[in-house]
Image (cartoon, rainbow, N blue to C red; front, side, top):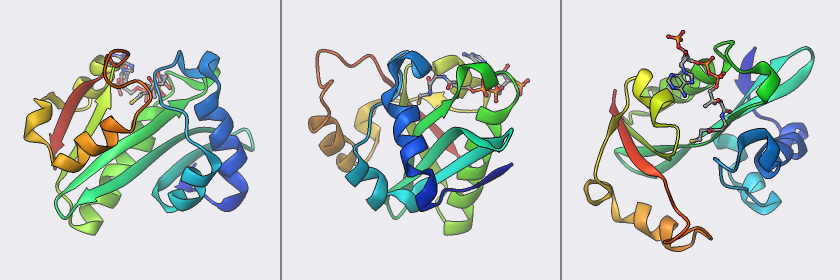
Length: 151
Ligand SMILES: CC(C)(COP(=O)(O)OP(=O)(O)OC[C@H]1O[C@@H](n2cnc3c(N)ncnc32)[C@H](O)[C@@H]1OP(=O)(O)O)[C@@H](O)C(=O)NCCC(=O)NCCS
């Protein structure tokens, strides 16, 4: 089941994003403070009575949102949970009136399969760069590619 995240999920989401073994370092860790203030961005997937994945839709500007923090526990991958989480976030973007969604990712195959296209960072809002400037991986440790989907 996919649902919006609740306060009770925060520690589990934090664990999903902090545990490098679970995502091979492909998602950025988030502090509890960031998770509390962005809790409403998050969807979770519940299976076997536990949260096994998450995904966030972060609003950037009036016409742009970012897909962030998409992780499914390794033992639950390949069961469409990643797709369903992403689709829930995209559906929310449309409900909000946002029709362009991007992600910064090393998982280009997954996102391309679901309709995203590679794009130049320069084409995105300047706020994206502001986030990059504050990232611990910027610039030398970053291998992420910008991908965009027009809904
Ligand atoms: C990326 C991730 C979320 C995918 O989750 P998942 O639940 O295994 O993916 P799904 O089962 O929903 O796959 C959905 C579709 O994408 C395809 N797909 C999955 N991974 C793919 C890849 N690397 N390349 C191409 N296609 C891929 C699947 O075959 C499936 O296709 P279908 O629906 O047409 O049958 C998961 O692998 C993960 O948590 N990875 C580590 C963290 C990460 O890299 N997150 C993204 C950072 S932005």
